[in-house]
Image (cartoon, rainbow, N blue to C red; front, side, top):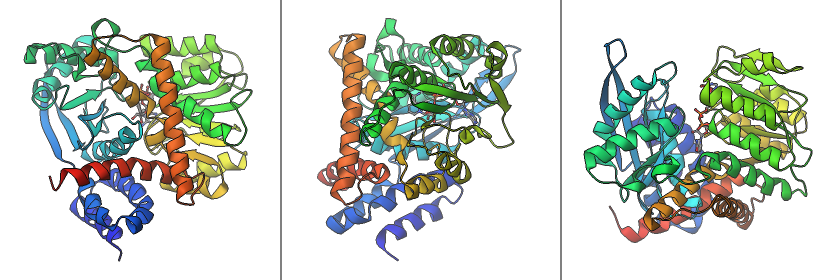
Length: 451
Ligand code: NDP
């Protein structure tokens, strides 16, 4: 057995009940074989990089509107701080557990490294479900969550942001409680803040916009562009909405969106007016995507199946696919359907939305495939830009932030593309992103000694 396989086996043996974490580790370790041939000394780095520096697990009690007491679990994984303060979002969703957060935090290490900004990898959250809760209940939950988390974070130590179930409202409540407990206005302690108290322009749009900038670069390697290209998008949350907006900006035609209740297919295309409707439906009225099919002609709605995936969405004939909902939402069979329809490119907006079988199908068929750690890095990159503005006590204009985001995505694409090419794996963005992200971390960890 080689040394990398032995490390993987140890990861599985230590935490046998963490399948999502194993999946994320396996994908990275598989890419590192040629790196180890060049740098045998990095084996001990790999051994350390798969173990979180710190895993914080705490109780979050809160009181609902009827006076009932509830107890949720809170987590923060401070996975790797070699190149900067821990950085990564908070997820509030009933599925949250240590395995999911460890997979997300592990991915975040390499994603943050790829952005070129000084950010370590972290992630956190809770199994709290904000759906159907009143504003008051969400506020009391966020305050209770922060009453524990505050002692572990800080603008030079660990900087959380949003993720599934954590948007501007939740970040605001948590920032307020942090400010009260710390008795300091630490602008840079959270990102994704509102504009009035230190948030950055373009941060809400950044993951979706960045995803499309990255996909634009992928298409360009084949001499193609978004102009007139049909696009399947899953999800209808933050990432999906702004991916849809940027696809429209670049002349593409988005034809699907989904939520956990099902998905819609609009063959005429989701135009700006229809996207405005979706944004209002999801962000203000907090409704279901099925309402879209009732509002607009010629649209079909398909209800979700028993699995938390999109039940047929990937069977729609499109040129580009942007999965933007959640992990493991696109399996091997669905990948085959996309390939059979002559898909050109797929870029992950969500974290690990494609199963390993799906990734294999894309790579074997020559479809361009970008892993989330490269293609969805625009969100955390803009969080990094928000931290820079907080430190400078300055606000950049929308155009300035958007231009920096675009340049970062172009650079991540180039870095992943060129690294893959250097190792004779041209077009393999998984390999290129893993290796480019890892090399920077490894160099820093080597410099720090055994800590
Ligand atoms: P949101 O909560 O805003 O939206 C999530 C969307 O996915 C919603 O439409 C939701 O439907 C749907 N969804 C969530 N879970 C499931 C499920 N189990 N089955 C089917 N549909 C589901 O989250 P974001 O848009 O912020 O995040 C989406 C993905 O992108 C996540 O993987 C996240 O980690 C990743 N990401 C997000 C970044 C960001 O900046 N926000 C940065 C980088 C990655 P419903 O409304 O019914 O719950």
